Length: 254
Length: 176
Image (cartoon, rainbow over all chains, first blue to last red):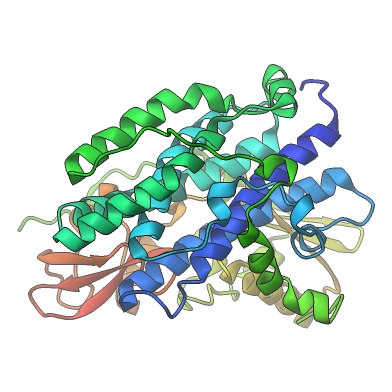
């Protein structure tokens, strides 16, 4: 085991938990709003996997943080500036093409990321990754199929997919940013070197885009800030919704 | 349509599953393991948490019973219900101090489920997992002429299929 301070591992687990939680929440917004019943179920099932993943990461972060922190205090009692999720996760769910494109781009990323995280020196992070990876393989099967269906579908579905990808592309470089914290953890064998995943990610995506007849644009613009608490305006609205009950009735239990 | 039943294959038991069975076989608290056979999967109430591969270990220290379970899917809501049912089941038998622990590693896999558990799934109307999701059989009429309707069914662990012979929709317990 490396001697990297627990504090840093806690912060790392916290960010991975934030990514999963916010993504899971966005997907859960499709509940009862899906284009048809099966897709409604599919998106909420994927949402559940992400929320479960978030619970695993946040419980571990809370354990390392100590001092009464729990998965719930981390999820419900932090405001925007303390949330460290990447921006791509917090963007509003948009239409079905937008949700599908985001899910696909993230599934390809998660597949690479979790595969690498399985080799973490930190046995808890590796265990969560091992569990989540199986689920992600399954998510990817579905999102990839939808990319092909929308891309090769009607003029309208193709256009919506192309528009969605162009709206998303500038948020993808942040997935591969490595900051000082992660640099430290990478040298300790704990964290994944995100930067090293970009090439494989891009070539996997390009292959699917090609089959779907949609252009994979270059990210000529890019935004970042999630890891340091600089978020889009959308996160505040999401948290207001997600945290409402705990804010209105602090400490309430089912 | 050639079918190979589980019984004709030489069973390959995954090492984790072998160890899990050994833990039960060698356990000094066999009565508690037996008691927990009464706790079923709330989503598939014909299968016990033992048969599902969720119940991993039971240890007793002083008067505290520690039960280790492995969740099926990260977000499976049934895992909380199972933990509560374990506590209730043991409380009814006089064990007041029960601690339910979640164990993530090794990650749960459908390959831990026994042939017996698969038979129970079929009787309940759920097609059991098949290697690489191939050769799935309708639990109602046994036809293998089936089609995938959705990757996600009524719960995280199931996909939705329809039989092209008898037209009935059915749940398929996914490989994981």
